[in-house]
Image 1 (spheres, rainbow, N blue to C red):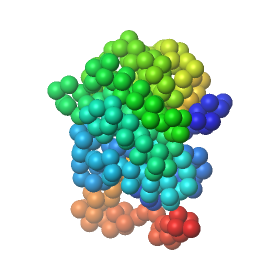
Image 2: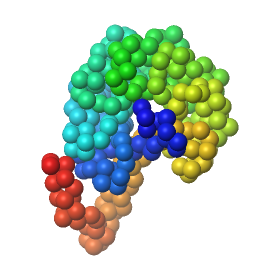
Image 3: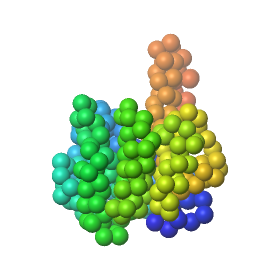
Length: 264
């Protein structure tokens, strides 16, 4: 939690496999996170529809922590369960697995009603906090903006309630603009706010986000999709017969060096 409350907070990138986690650790990041979307994609599944199990995500998070020795925050969707008691069980399992943090969303996995009712969402965060007992950083997240509910007032209401229920960090991916982001930061203060890259209208710098009062910056699946764009370009070159472009990349000497650091 100290990383969140210090001046400047932290940038917490999201890894999707062992090698990406080792690369982030080698770059000097002090903490990393999983990405439910990237993890799902690596397994050939879609995100946010309960297609990844709690045990699969825990195993993945343990791998990242074991290889890097860094604090790992688990992007654990809605807490993997239908009831607040299920969420508590997920938090207990995350603590037992050695995770440093866990995110709980107000999503439902139901495309017809993707956001849970206010009271239910708050109850789930309260249950997570009760199970955590200060042993793990709990992030309360509302997905209003990315689920087609551009209601800033309701978003602030939810995040404020999550903070009052004991969430250590709160989070609403892609607020519409900087003014909305500042409104969120102000409303929930002194609870730290996480931002996924930036407001929706413009990608800001880390310095600009810190000036707005943001304490944690994550990137979700963005690094994974960046890597997949490179693969797509290489695939296109291969189809066109350009073997040089298609096969240019990081060398296995570098990969083996990183893997050796992880196993040690």
